[in-house]
Amino acid sequence: MSEPQPNLDRKLSLLHATAINMIDMVGIGPFVVLSVVAQIMAGPYFLYAWIAGALLSYLDAMVWSQLGAALPRAGGSFHFLKEGYGEKWGSLMSFLFVWQTMIQAPLVIASAAIGFSQYANYFFHFTVWEEKAVSGSVVILVIALLYRKIESIGKISVFLWVGVLGTMLWIIGGGIAHGNFLAPIKHINDGFTLQHGFVAALGFASVKTVYSYLGYYNVCHLGGEIKNPSKNIPRSMFISITGIAILYLAMNISVASVLPFSTLSTSKYVVSDYIKTLFGSTAGGIATVLILLVAFASLFSATLGYSRIPYAAAQNKSFFSFFDKVHPTLKFPHRSLLVLGAIAFVFSLLFRLKEVIDGILAMRILIQFIGQAIGLLLLVKRKGNSFFPWKMPLYPIPLFLAILIWGAIFFSTGTKMMLSGLVVISLGLVAYFIAKRMKWIA
Image (cartoon, rainbow, N blue to C red; front, side, top):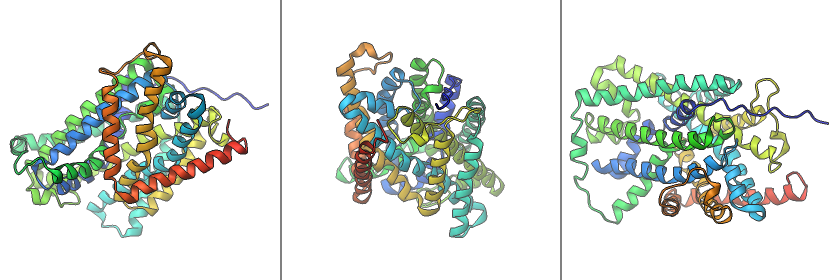
């Protein structure tokens, strides 16, 4: 008879949960896509793409909050889909989510590592292979840091969070003190006309800004380790989104108040160039180091949250039993962490950042975001409102708006990425029916 597995400990407070969410959200994303978004929008109204990303995050966080407060378990979406779709379809939907997580979670981890290595080029001017060696090494270092008890990770997260906030506040403070901070706001509508071209550009740009907001739900994947989850899970998400939206908008306004739009929309190291313009070359180098710290912090947080998903599914006998193991003394799902880390290491060597960003969204929208929202509708119908300790205001209007916008974002990722997402789902269907037939899953 096998020994009983130790349980996960509820040791993460609201502070820890918020820190983990925010350092996941502020990765390398806002620093590398700032110029891309400005280039796509081709005008001062590029700020609207960042506002659109925040609005979608709020809407979607309502879905996550209602489900996370009611089902606070390790694995988050795995349980949400399983419960939402019920006995007949829940097993399939939850399996498909974990299946795609085994691909898109390493893509998320790889994106932060690739972004880290690309921004490090500010100093080192790596060759292609040196850049890949750096991104792979960063993944390995993160796995080593996460190989420890959850309370230690909570403390590390708060430390990294302070670094993230300090970096953002320095960037914003420079624009307030030395730039014409209000000018980008006053001129936000210069050249703006609401027509098909603007709507299309907003869609493509929002793919990038939404990527920069992803991570507000990381707390749900750690639901089995959160104190007072029915309150702290929703609170941590809305605090995180509000704080990050303010920081992103203020950072974009600060940079736009100093750099000409031609530089803003073309620079590979736009924030470093901004700080260099204000304070000189040494300060630009320090800013780059801090941005690298932020990217590393995000990588740390994302890997932590995703490592709980295959473990939770395997514990539920809905995924391969290999992942149903918690470290006997450190009490964390070590096999899940190591496998996801290994796949992320390979992805960090194979792909480019743009491909990874588009692939991340295309792969997860149908099953995780849209599928989860539909699952909430089904669960409310089956269980009733009394089942949920936290309820979204104006239900189900925010839910339907989230589904509509996610559908538009999916379309904006492009034909290649949409097809790749559908291929992953198709392979998952094949794997599910084989696993069922072979009795590898319940």
